[in-house]
Amino acid sequence: MTTARKHRDAGQAFPIYITVVGGLLFLALAYLAVGQAAVNRNGAQTAADAAALAAAMNTRDELADQWVKDVLDPTKWQDIFDGNVEVADSCWRADQLAARNDATAQCTPEPPLSYKVDAETNKTVGDSVVPGTENMKSTAHATAVIETLCSFTPTGDDSVLPELICRDRTWTLDPDDLTDLPGPEDLFDVHLAD
Image 1: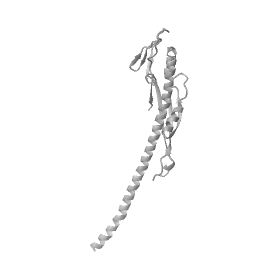
Image 2: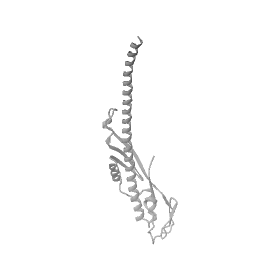
Image 3: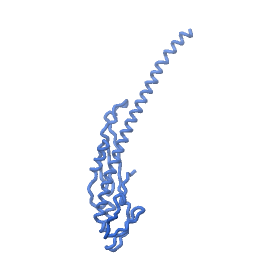
Image 4: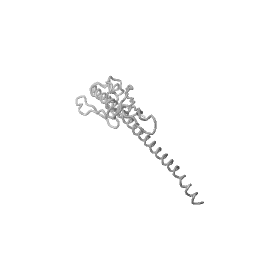
């Protein structure tokens, strides 16, 4: 009698084994789907960050060019450093960088000195065991800020340019020899906001 019972019990373990293996396989596929979504989301965030930074850096360069153009007129400096001058919209750079990262971007200039970008990946998450992911695209948001690094005190004398203090460096500007001027990266910092 014990041998007959032994054979009956042996057959009951097989369905449990199949159920456990099937469950583990489903979990593995679900984790794979989560991984696919995370990779796609990271791609969207990379595209948004790059696009926002590109637009802000282009504007930074335009502001620096404007400062070089008006270097002999210190009355215009503060408006340039505050972003209160006319510069072209740089959202076209955001579109370029998003496209390089296989995404599209919606760029919005936030006057005076920042750009907000919403990016969406061109690729979908793809087919997986999670329903609905085959048409789902990832989105991300980024804001890049242009921050002035320089300060100056007007001299009150039109023949003397004020000293320009940018971070830890002081620029003594000679109106007769303007060969050594700060570059865009000396005048402005570009970084992502929170």
